Image 1 (cartoon, helix red, strand yellow):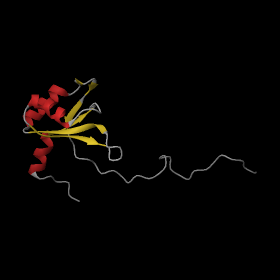
Image 2 (tube, helix red, strand yellow; image 1 turned 30 degrees about the vertical axis):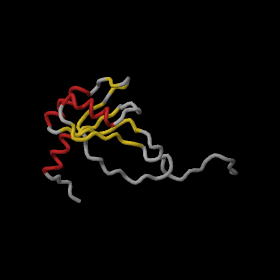
Image 3 (spheres, helix red, strand yellow; image 1 turned 45 degrees about the horizontal axis):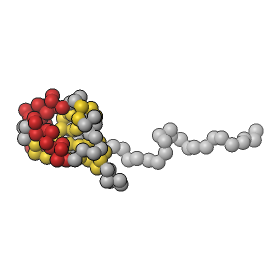
Image 4 (tube, one colour; image 1 turned 135 degrees about the horizontal axis):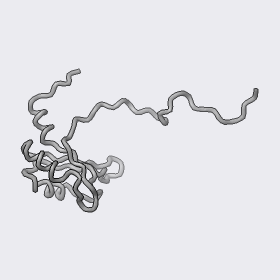
Length: 118
């Protein structure tokens, strides 16, 4: 496995922002309009739940330059938007997660309870 990023990917990560704390009613157009106050918005995407089709309350905004991305972070991080406090920071690549298993992460075999004969 290689963890080296191409130059284009490094640049993209520096201009792509994570935006959390979005009101569930926020539309992508409104998100793009908000971040346009900090500069040219390349894209604005709100992440939707696959099952319900509703917003998950976060998204990503890509700005044209690193300077604009930095300006957007300073303008909007910890600021209120439509009654909710936003979290805005540089997006990071999604980390590989271990496969999910059923259960409650307590390990071992369930059981216990019930009557025991000694």
